[in-house]
Image 1 (cartoon, rainbow, N blue to C red):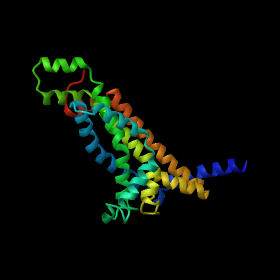
Image 2 (cartoon, rainbow, N blue to C red; image 1 turned 180 degrees about the horizontal axis):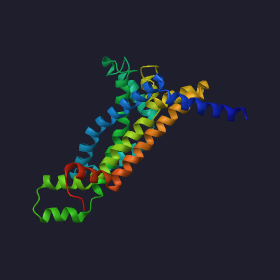
Image 3 (cartoon, rainbow, N blue to C red; image 1 turned 90 degrees about the horizontal axis):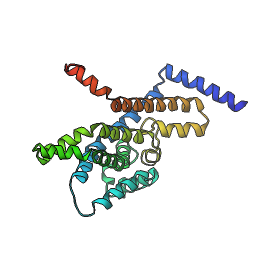
Length: 246
């Protein structure tokens, strides 16, 4: 019964922290969004062009490379954290930049973590475009570049979903954030590391508050994916652009 009462009081405390806009809770949530969004944008700029290149061009070892990328889907976050830690520590090759225990180092770690996932999903998205579409483009006299542009347009929904999934992976991971950021209060403490720490300290109210925020962000991600896959975003763009609706 004591544990149940602790949970109930924790939920009440969590709601109070959220309603009163507790500064520390807001700071942790804002830092989490900043790091995850930054790493997702950087990873997108790398993964989308690289995935497109791998899909559209044939070269020796292409199948092996794709298999390796898919294998990295399940790469443990602590392994990524260890590798990045060794790279950016004072004795590492990137130690000069002083990225260890900083948001910049966490962004680097999360970027490395989600690039293989996004790249593999981009390749899968482009591969999912029907062969008949490609044949039609060729029969209409489209150049190679024009064909690539049209195929990317056909796969844009799946590519956007890959970006959103990459963001979801970034904001929910713990290993890289803990090892590279060090969970420093007010500096590198994010939602996942704060939840782990406060739960260990028995501060269930604070942990639940952060958990509610994290789940809310996940809900927003799912809602965006639903809007994309249902075509609602395309309808909104047509309305904004003044295109006539059917």
